[in-house]
Image (cartoon, rainbow, N blue to C red; front, side, top):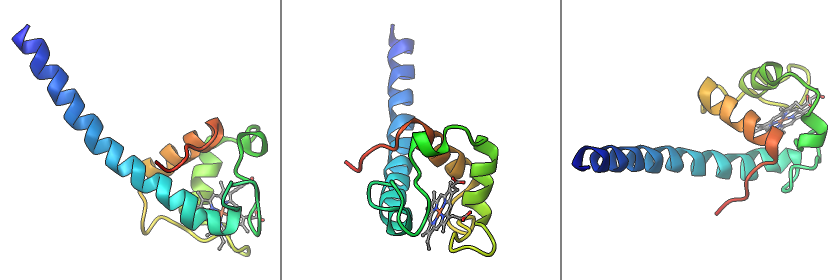
Length: 102
Ligand code: HEC
């Protein structure tokens, strides 16, 4: 029982840490990406980033667009401020319907 409780506490601590990074990424997408893709991500200068718009595009190519940008368009590369893992997390959430900022 004691052992199980220790695992539960450890998992909670990890989840809290991941939660902080996730909150940062949600803010980044809503604010920075939103400045081009629209505050509701339904498009503006940039294309819409809704599940409907992205659904049939391969996730790896979307991750690569986020990391490297699209040369010749306004879409900038983000790899200097986010990791590949962050970009994968963002694309996965975009495909599901991006969470609101808390
Ligand atoms: C300065 C404006 C700008 C900002 C800021 C920006 N984008 Fe973009 N983005 C664009 C434009 C313009 C395109 C369309 C490029 C094209 O014509 O292929 C695009 C395309 C994309 C695509 C590909 C969409 C598709 O249907 O293929 C994704 C995914 C994307 N952006 C994600 C992001 C994310 C995530 C962020 C924030 C981390 C971000 N963008 C920030 C302008 C921007």
